[in-house]
Length: 164
Length: 164
DNA sequence: GCATTTCGTGCAATGAAGTTGCGAGCGCGC
DNA sequence: GCGCGCTCGCAACTTCATTGCACGAAATGC
Image (cartoon, rainbow over all chains, first blue to last red; front, top):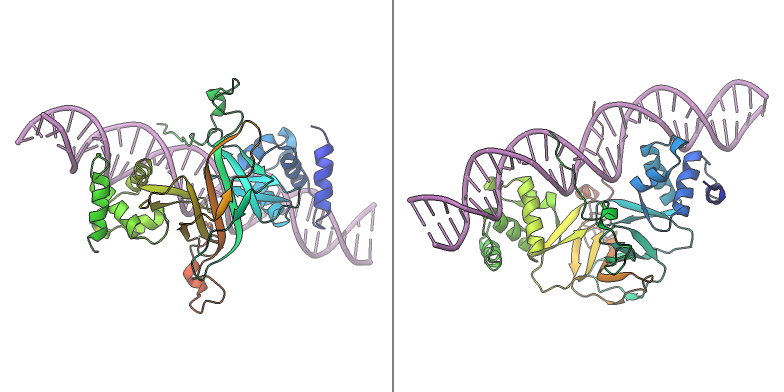
C-alpha cells in the first residue's frame, strides 16, 4: 500500500489539532483512496490485514471524521451508511448517485439546477439532499463486462438466510 | 375508529384484482389516515389492538402495497423505512421533507424546479429523490408548543443501551 | 527522558430493524 | 360447500450499529 494517501490523511488530521492516531489515519487514507462512497463494511475490508483496527473503532473514527468535516455521511437505500472523504470544500448541498444494481454510491460535484419546493407554513429547511438512482457504467445493460455474479452486494441482496 | 378509511382501502385493494385480506385493509387504512410517512413501528403501533396482525405481516403487506403502487417507500436518515399511501398519481420523482428533530417525514407535492446534474459517462438514471432536511412546525425553535420530551423518537435517538 | 493526564481503542454484550422457513388458515373461483 | 393456492403467525435468525468498561497509547508538563 503506497504511503501517499496515508501522508495526506495524516496531514489532514493534524490540521484538526486533535490527536493523530493510526486508526484515524488508516480510515481516512482508505476513504481518500476510494473513488466513491464506502460503506462501513467495505472500509473494514479494505483496511490492511495486520492493522488490527476494530470494527467499533472504525465506527467511532468515521463519526469523528464526520464531526471534523473530513468526511461526510450518506444514507443509501439499503439501510447502510456510506462515507466519503470531504476533500473539496463541499457545502451542505449534495447530489449523490446510487446504482440500483451494485449499490455503489458516488458524489456528483454538480448540483444541477435546483430550487427547493415550497414548504408548509412553519417549516424551515437548512439542508437538501438529491439522490439520483439508476445504473452505473459497470451495471449498464449494454456493458459487455456486465456480470451478474459480480453484483452479489447489490441492493437486491438483503438476504440473511435461516440455518438449522 | 371510523370506517371511512377502511372502505377506501378495501376499494383500492379490490382494484388490484388480488386477494383482499384484513391485514392489507388495516395497513393501507392506517397509511391513508396518516398525514405523513409512517415507519413500520408507527404503523404497528397504530393498528387496532385486537387486530392480531403480526409484525412480519406488516412488513409483507407494506412490501406488497409497494409493488402494487398503493404505497411508496422512503428511506430516511435513521436506517428506517417509511411508507405512505400513494393516493395521488405520483411519478417516480418525489420530494420529501424530513425533520431533523422528530424524524417526521412528509411528502411534498411540488418538486421545485430541478434538473438532474450531469452523470459520468455510461451512467443512466431513472429516478430522482429530493430530500429537504430541517425543522418541522412542531419542532421549530420559536414554537411555544415545543417540548423536547415529545421528541424521544427523533433522529438523535439511536440509543440501544446496555443492560447487565 | 519520565511521570501524568487525557483521550482513543479492543472486546464483548446489547439493541433495533428487517428477513426467512414452515405449517396452519383464509380468500376466492369453481 | 370444496379445494387450491396465496397469506398469516410464529419463532428463529441476520445485519448494521451502539454502548460500557478496562486497558493502552498520545500529548503535555516537568
